[in-house]
Image (cartoon, rainbow, N blue to C red; front, side, top):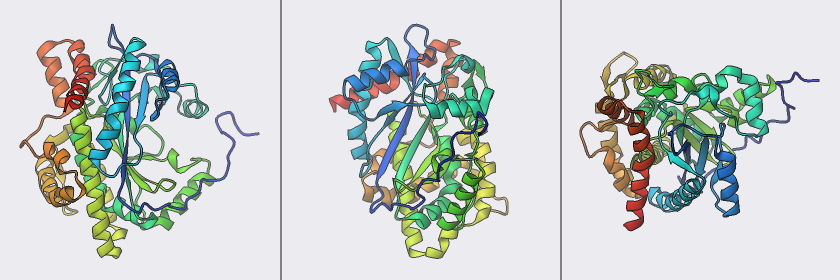
Length: 393
């Protein structure tokens, strides 16, 4: 008989990659459920999901903790289509949350919540995770943006990962919105990123030369009972064979819908550019494992300093300001963004020489007011104003 923490071990899921004919996109948003009076996280997911079912509202699901809610889009052609699909769902779920006495907020962490008081969502998989991780379970009460982009096959998925791993720190710095944890200023741009390293099989992906190499890894880890399926691999970017995508998981949940759409546009454009390059130069799919080694350090620099980081650009150690490197990258992506229809959404990332990140904004609000409520009000109201303005336009 297996030990209590070892679930029944079935066969590994199908590792056949189901290719996407186009570079379609979809996103997953992790929202915070707040008590309206005190602004703390509240375990409202069970009631809110029941209300969504009664209303026939699709695309809303549970997350690990009962104070989290996940919003998913379907398959979309570009960011304009995604926005059109996402905003009506957000409006309806917000109305339902308000009717139950809850507010919904955006951000990578809650500023002052004591995570040890959190309740796990009542699902078998989540309780297995809790049984495995014990105390560390509650350090994972963080909120992220996940973006799926369709790719042409398994080898292409690995090739795109090999090409884009060097830009994961840039995406993290752009999205950073989690400077506080448990009422403490961590000094980090992304406390979420640091905390998520506690998750088994989290953080930067391993290097693989091709799809066969990745499948071998999955089978070994499955046979060792380390994973049950590829979804148990929580890397910052990972392949999703059943739905034919690569999934970017590096980002904090931004504070605004504008930043969410802009980041999605950038990830979409980067994937299109990478796939085109690899179609022209198939040997480049093997990538350069040195990019993975360097990306680990650059991710830490982005976690700590955000856009102020000095990132490593070459194996020889040449450094460049991350904000400057990002500006160069965005400039390169403009022609493809125009082709995909994403240029208008990506424009906000290029509209100012040095934009304010979510973490910088939250720190500034706290230093100006000394009041957690100012941060909570910003996290729950700012994106709602965007929804209202979008409804008028």
